[in-house]
Length: 324
View (cartoon, rainbow, N blue to C red):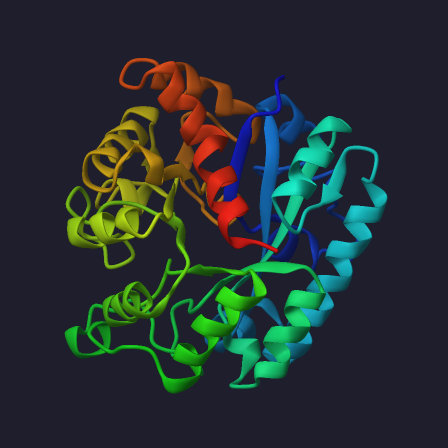
């Protein structure tokens, strides 16, 4: 399968592999993503998130480490998986790395952090994460942290902007060459990033609030602003972000949200952000190996040039313009 898809969010390393005590690996994972499925699906680059479990999620998972300790734990597992799969997978820090890896026939692996909670207000940790290869940080997950506030059904929380440390991190991430991710962030925080970031930013795994009224989704005004800044929205495959109250993810619903993003943010702002191995929806296309079925269906409403932009062109441009 041709290497052509850049997917900007999956939870495979943290949620499937790290706590399995070696029972699950990138070679042997029954979930949405493993090496074989990436190859069959046509992966060019996969963004592997270190999702930081906190609060009741950490308790339920039996995690007793601090967020910073948990990052270090999953990071070591990530390095081990890179080494074990170096024949087909290679780390990528920037645009040139992705092109080099593709020329060598290898899938690029981009390391990300979902929830900036392990930063804990310490700028030196942001510098450390960059040195370790992290190239995208989702500012929040579902809880307040030192950067800002999450999306919320409480209007008062939803309106809150970034904290002083969150504002400081915008400029430093711009300077270092790291992507700012607004998925999970409060509306107020989103608009602070629009105002203060000098670089394009990303919603790594989000959908459209006008089509599905979920606080995790982006409004039309947000989509427009993100597109104006040169950013990209990675379409999320979670059923609850595509259709209210649904447990099933069908290709038609994905295409509906993709067309809406194209109409409101522009074709240059559209990409894939599957949330594979972080979602429990019943997927019509099963897993990453089923990605070609989505691409085939996209021919109904997108031109060949548009499909190529969605698959990789838009993200390659964003990566070239931001990552170092």
